[in-house]
Image 1: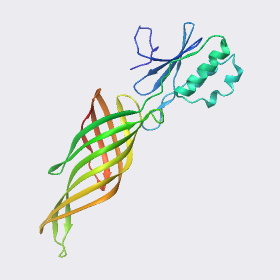
Image 2 (image 1 turned 120 degrees about the vertical axis):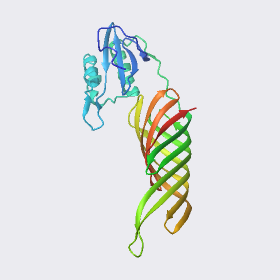
Image 3 (image 1 turned 90 degrees about the vertical axis):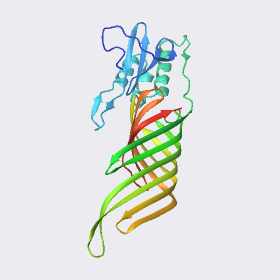
Image 4 (image 1 turned 135 degrees about the horizontal axis):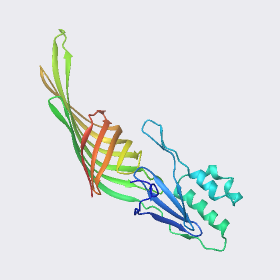
Length: 273
């Protein structure tokens, strides 16, 4: 998606109306950021915030405070607090409401804003990653909860997680004999993971942290035979990944995870129900 007024060609966009008055306020959701549009007697003012690249460099310089300062030129009470206005629905709506009251106190301001409701969805994921002589396999099914009123890009994931991580290594016996061993770590867990999506839009990198009740089974095979280890414990989880939406309920997901041990990245398909 692009900006609503980036060219002279006619385009159609879906926007959400937040306020109606002398100045009308609309919200337009770009792929990677929100844009507010203020309309007044045929004039339109685009409000954007500064965006950054993954390396922290400025991608697009925001100008919403300059635009608000220009609109508030006749309202002294509004101009003094421009630097304190945040780039979110409540702050921008409050400014435009006060702007309407300042310019025409006799005209009613209609508020169309609806508070974001909590969301509940079920997500299933299956993925794998090729490693030496085998595959790391991962599967999970989780309930994903979010409450946009508190945090738009934060989710709580609760469910069942399975992973199988193979590994090949080299060891030394007491006689300094070099031998090769293989391990296979199988994890079943009940995780609670807090996930933060760094960006909005179709492609969303994320980080996550939490804990789990975990059952760990390890098979260790070397020249003397096979040793089996297993235990049940409470473990810390750390996860870094990316989710890319193909369709409304279908995503491509890649995730690196630490849970008892460092697992290889799992790349696969996620489905929302």
